[in-house]
Every structure is written in C-alpha cells, then in structure tokens.
Length: 434
Image (tube, rainbow, N blue to C red; front, side):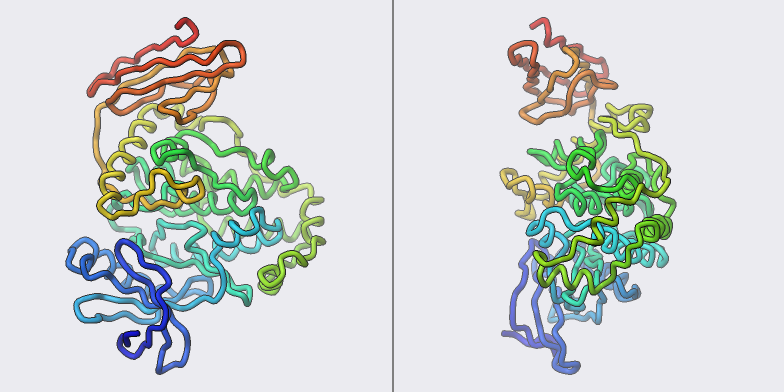
C-alpha cells in the first residue's frame, strides 16, 4: 500500500463520509500509528478542510496521559492528514457491546480516567463536544484514553454548529443555547450511565424522538436496570445528567473528587492492571471489589429527582425545547443524507451513534395539549413520548401527526392532528372522548 511521508500504510481501519483512517508503520520510530486522511472531495470543501485543520491545530497542543496523542500533521498531495497514537485494544463502545454491564469498580476507574482527560482538555480552554463510548480507547495494558477531537472548539469560540451524536449531546447543545464545560460533562454522564446499565441513556426509534428525549426526559432510573449499583455512584451519574447545566458539577475535577471519595469509602484500589485483567479474561475477573462496592452505604451527595420531566425545563417552557429539538433533527436529516451517513432503519444501538450535523434553524410552533386517563401511553407517529399526565403541552413542528393512546382502561385510540406554521394556539385533543 502507499507510503505517506515516512509512514507505511498497511491496513484500512475505517472509511467514513469525510475521512479514512489507516493503520501504518512509522518507519523512523518503528512504531504502529494511525493516519487520519481527509477524502479528496472533502479536501476541496472549505468547511471540511477548515474543520480538519482546526482539529489538527487543537489536538497537537493537548497533552495528557488520558488523551490519545496527535503525533504530527501534514499534507499528502492536496489532502491534509494527522498521525495519531495507536491504542491497542477495544473502544469502550465495543467493550459494552460485548459485556453489557461492566463491573462497578471498573466503571469508577474508567470514569475517573475519562474525567481526568476532560479536566485536561478544559484546562486548555477547549471543549471536546463529542464524548461518547466510541471515542474512549482502552489499551490492553489498562490505560484509558479519550480521543477524536473532530468537533472540538476553543472555549472562547462562538457556539458551534449542531454536530455530533444525538444520544450523547447535551440539551443546551441541541437547543442552540450557550455551550461550555458543562456540556461535555453531560455527555460524560451519558457514558457513565451506559457503563453502569449496559443501555444507552437516550435512544428511540427515530433521531427526532432521541433528540426530544435528551431535551425533555430523564433516562430509565439506574436502580431499575442495575439495582446493586450503590446510591453514591447513581447520584454522581444523575448530577452529570442534570438538564440544567448549573446543577451539574462545576468542573471535571469535582467529579474526580466524588469518585475518589467513593473509592476511599469502599476501600477500592482499582487500577490499570484491573482493567487489563478484565480485558484479557472477563470471565475470570474477581468479584470481591464489586461486593465491597455494593455493600458501601454511599457517599453523601445531593440526590437527583427521578422524574419523567426535568423541573428546570418545565419551568422554562418545555414545549419550546421539544420544537427546537425536533427542528434540529429535520435539518440534520437533510445534511446527513448528503453525507450518506443517515441510517433511518438502523437498530437502536446503531441509531444512538449516528452523527448529526446541521445548521441552527428557526421554525413556527404549535402546541398539543393531550388530555387522557392518567397512566396512558401516548405515541406520536409511532414513537412513545411518555405517559399522561404531562407537566406541560408538547410543541411540534408544522405538519400532520398520528397521535395514539394506549390505556389499560380502554381500547387503543388514535387521531390525526394538523399543526400549522405559526400556530401559537394550544390545540386540545381529548382522546378519552373520541
């Protein structure tokens, strides 16, 4: 295969819509590296070339043991490239897919390592903006590294274009509000939730529903999916996933403090060698540390409210959040189709990780006030949006919708509704009387 400026390419690992990642040998240092090479078509685009060069510039100046290093950068003909540290081992995404729920002591260890990486990134006045299991690399020697700074932005830069993976975006990012370190911490909370439960925190049948869930609803309580998880660890995760950025941790260092306190109270001494042992033979991983963790009464932390809707967003016009979320999706669909990266019928685990990149758009709004028997399940165009009663009316983009309600007390009923552009009146649809 081709030689790129002293790097002998010998394998193609991933061919994406914008760039290709190769495995290569550094002929000078005699070590395996990764080469991220921008596609020729993307290199001709000012947008993609600028974004790639920005990623290169930012990543080259970041250095931390928990960050995957960018070793060098250059041009291969008309195409820019980056040389990345090669981490031999699975991504966190691959590990969760294989093992589902991870041992709780390893959840704490990996979380501390990722938090340390975020603390370093934020210390350089940079936002990562794409924290997700696919971008967390686990080495067979037990090291944990956060990588892929393709969406990273300077903290002082204007709020970025909506781009990333919906299931791990923060509510404020989706809604075009101010984005800061708290947005990365929300994404980190979604990753921690997934490590503990083995389930994606926010995912639904379509991208639109996923965006609505991120902005409006809390994920399934951890206690239901992993009852043995200690309250202190649950509290840490809930605090990270608070809808209101001001309620989350003030910084990544504060997360590390609480995780360290949890370790101390549990008598945990989980380190890189524990993760290495688990990666080598998961079936032989000792459960002693897990038992100690479960028996710990928990660190005293503020408890999160396990409610269907966030009180913060209920007080700040929940309907507006829903309309903006759905609008972001509609714009995203158009853009993703251009990238050939939109998979409408993909399985849930894959849909949670489909990337969205879209301009921020404005739209008319109409409100739907559903009145039905309490405890009824409501579906809009086949997507479950929760159970009645709702704390406030739902806002929807203009269009026609199929609304269905299922209740234990009556046969399923459905009705079509029309939401008009600029319609600010709340439409009352009383399904119980249909």
